Length: 394
Image 1 (tube, rainbow, N blue to C red):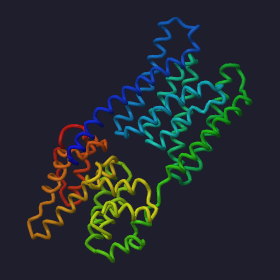
Image 2 (cartoon, rainbow, N blue to C red):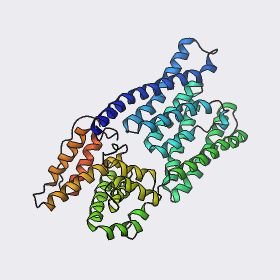
Image 3 (cartoon, rainbow, N blue to C red):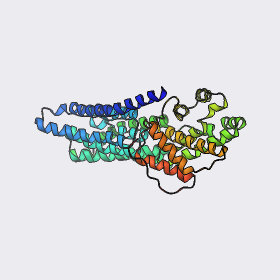
Image 4 (cartoon, rainbow, N blue to C red):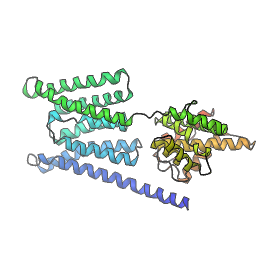
């Protein structure tokens, strides 16, 4: 019954994805059309059509980047709305108060630096067409937005450059906006430049808020050898501790290779089986322990998703831990039975079975990511040869 439910859910997810992507594409075109309404009396109909089409294509490049990078469906849905509707609303403001760069900065932190930069360039071109501005507007906005992405990324990473980059960003905005007005009025407009800093400061404040929201959780209180939870695990069962440590190490290595959250992967590997210290239904018991220790939603999701008993993995970290747990458990079982252990065959079998069962359908692995994860597992056990991955996007 559970298998039938999982198959039905997988088919539903596969059906809903193209529907959501089609909706986002249509929504983008419609918003671009409404955003160009102010030009309707200034243009011939075919000119307006070209402007809307080019602007829509630019913004749809951001949606394509979400899909290519395997961003989750819900995240893609929310962020594409932020890009398109946020841009349309900001265009209602006077130019000097218009902090368009804040959208690209938010995407840099919530998605990736690459998506932020794609957003910066795409929005610069789209807005330039939608308001029929001079080429100089495009150059200025593009420079400001790209610098905003770089500043947001450095602020998120912290360190001395995280302090210097927003200062450079503020001076750059002041200078470029002043030069833009110099081009229009043949004099450096200090008033216009200072007014533009209001939008700049606002974008920096919003960026800091998003950084604080996205700030990495301190997982050491669950993963350190001296943490209360790990000490309790050692007291209860050394075999459980060593199993969890092995899963955590493999998961961290695999997560690092595909550039997802290696800290979350390691922490998830350490705590995925904590419920086994309490009872038979180790997933429910694990969630109870997770609540007692005030763990994040991401860790609780790993406890539920590393086994397909309740639901399939929805994040890449959960999927990696599920694969690592299956591999390590299989190796441990064969060793207990004094049977021959061939880690490469076990890895191949586990990966094939998980694909065939549909357990990996909801975690958005690409073909290359799947191959890299498999190679990370093989390398962990001393196999450096490349294996051919199964075809098809998961």
